[in-house]
Image (cartoon, rainbow, N blue to C red):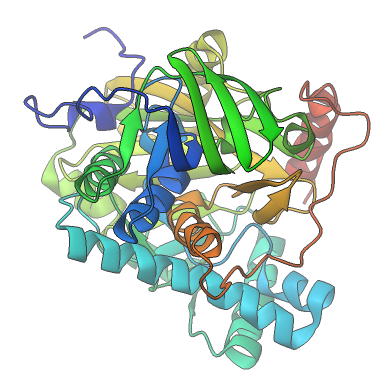
Length: 427
C-alpha cells in the first residue's frame, strides 16, 4: 500500500468523532490562550471550571501539532539526567524538579480517569537503552543517584538479560523505570479538548493570531477570525512559536521528530520485540524511540534530521528510520512500513521546560521531548496562577535564557548536528 504521510494516531479516532463545534469569536474574554495543544487545552479546562471565560485560539485545528503527532510516551524525568540536575542545582532544588515530572504523570493519570478519556493510558514503564557500553556506565550512575538522592527506584538490566525486556542485541543494557506510561496522543488531546469545552471554554479553530497589543486593562488580539479583548494571554505555542511573540521565539528551538509505523505485526513477533510492552528510547543524540501500538504496529521514531519538520524532510526520514529500525530489529526486514509523519518538538538553551511571564504574557513551553505529561501539567499550573491561586510552578524562578544571534531561524543547527553525529560515532 502507498506510504501514508499522516500520523497513524489520526486513524484511531472514531469515524464519527469531530472537532469542537463551531464557535463564534466573542468580543471579550477573561483569558485568551494562543495554541490548542496539551498546554492550552489543559489551561482552558482549569480556567473554565473555575468560572473564567476563556477562548483557545488555534491557527489550524485543535491538537493538530505535536499533541497528536508524538510517540505517546509519558515519561519521568526530563532531558537532563539526575546527576546533572544535582550538579546544577544542588539536592533540594534538583529533587523538586524531578518531583515535578512525577507529579505531571500523576496529573495526566487523574485527568484521564476523571474525564473518562479513552486513550489507552497505562503505566507500562520505560526503558532507557544504552547505545554504547560507556552509556551503560552512565545508566549505572543514574540509577545510583535516583535511588540515593531522589528516593526513586529504577532497575538496571545488563545486556545479558535485556531480551526479557527488549528483543534486540543492538543495545548494551538498559535502565527500567516503571513509573512511566503510554497513551494514544490523538485520542488524549481530543478528550482533553472535549473536557475543556464541557466546562465552557470556547475553542476557536482556524483562528490565527496576527497581532497582540497591550492596552489599558488587558490585551487586544487580532486574529484571522476577528478581534478579541482579553484580560490575560497565555502563549502555548511550544514548537510552533512564531514572530507573533518574538522574545519567546528567541528562547525556543523547534526540531523535527519523525516516526514510522509498520503494518500490524503477528502476536508472537510483537511479544518477542517488547515482551512487556515498555516504551523505549535510547542514549544517542540522534536517538531512536519506539513502542507498540494497541494493534501491534511498531512505531519507531527519532531525530532523523536535525531541522524543523517539513514535508520534504518527512519523506526523506522514512528511509532513514527504516534503516535504523532494521539495525535494532533486523528480523523485521520483510515488514511493510505503512506510515511516516513528523512534528516539532521544542528545545530550550538550558534543556528545561519554562513557564512564567514575559512582556506581561503568560507562557509555558520548551518541553524538550517530554511534553505529554509536562505540557498538560504546566497548563493547569499556569491556569492556577492566572486565577490567583497558590503558584505551584516548579520553574518559576528559573531564568529563561535567550539564544544569542537567534531570531527564530536556527542557522546553527547544521553545526550542532555534525557535533552530535561525532559524539554518537565515538566510543
